[in-house]
Amino acid sequence: MKDDKKKKEAENLIKKGDRLFEKGRYKDAHTKYKEASQLCPEMPDVYDKLSAAHEKIVKDWGIGEMVESVGYAMAKQEAESPSIRFLHRRLSPEWNTIMNKINELILCEGEEAEFKIVEEIETFGTAAIYPLIHILLEIKKTGKEK
Image 1 (spheres, helix red, strand yellow):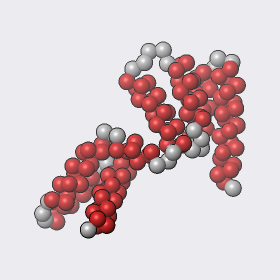
Image 2 (cartoon, rainbow, N blue to C red):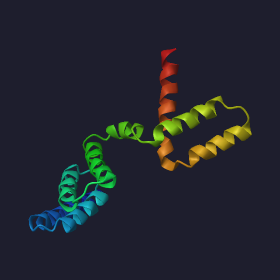
Image 3 (cartoon, rainbow, N blue to C red):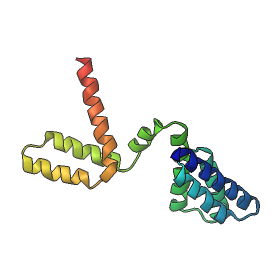
């Protein structure tokens, strides 16, 4: 029931954004679309609207604008196909660094060394979850092959 209310509220925000967009108030439309995407991130259409408004309000594209635009495309893909989220995590800049730390942890000896590496992995916060899950799934797969 709560999700239905959020979805309805997000749909209303999108409609408001559409009206603002039609009036040429792109920045205000972008704000409404952004609110809708935060309220109900699993609605893929909102990301196209965010991109369209973003393109209208940004005059000089730099790396920040490019990252934001790519972020909308990735969020849309995840809304359309949640399993793609794992692929996106693998493309993150932290992935290889975290994987290297996990490999160090596996190969290191002694509790003190383990603790130090665990603390280093912990600094990545939730970004470390997917590489750790990846390792566990690889171990699981290897076990089934034997």
